[in-house]
Amino acid sequence: MKNCLKLTFDSGQTALAIRADRQAELPDALKQIGLGGSHSVLVVVGGASNISEADFLRIKRLFTEVLAPIAENLGAYVVDGGTNVGVMQLMGKARTQIGGKFALIGVLPENKVALPNQKEPAADLTLLEPNHTHFVLVPGDNWGDESPWISHVATVLANNAPSLTILLNGGEITFEDAFSSINIGRLVVAIAGSGRTADILADALRGEATDERAKKLAKSGILQYVNLIDIDKGVENLGKIIKDLLSNYE
Image (tube, rainbow, N blue to C red):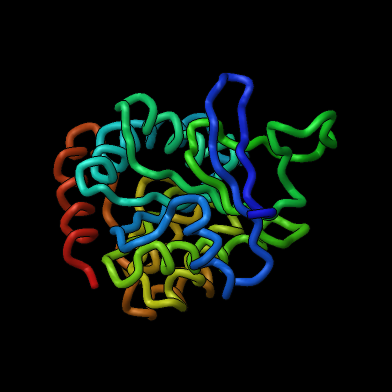
């Protein structure tokens, strides 16, 4: 297991990481870090460092009251981009806040991140989110290189169990994440009202698209949106919608 690493964060939290050079290696690589079998999978993609404070606060409840509890109740795996910013930070903190035991797997380009074991990492590298339980380090020198890997990791982990992608906020790379899921046949749920890319996609589904990529995604037939304008009143209902989709969508 030369590519398997045990990471220890400054907080004392630990995680297992694996390097994968080819997607064909993923089934064996994931088994090396204890991620085998067949599980429902929730993929979370969206805003990272450029998410606004207002949007961040707006969607925070969704993670602690909906996404993390659903993963815990279903025994699902959660897959995201694994860095200590935006929706990935919210996912990690929510898991810890609810005392969750579900596996939380970050998938990232190794050349863009600073591992906690590294001495004096380059200043331009991004930190890992310390509440994640596992990381998959993949080839790439640019953000976005991980997009197809996130989708493929989720497919391998699901192993024919239901899987679902939740898209919140997001920038340019989030479009790539959405295409990667749709190209593999995974339902993408864009959370309207969460800002930026998610709202652009929601507009497309309402027939109000101005972005060509959004129009293309809307025509795919496996993009849905859930309106979050009344999130303060509708968290429970939103949770039921997502849980039903994850439980029943094949």
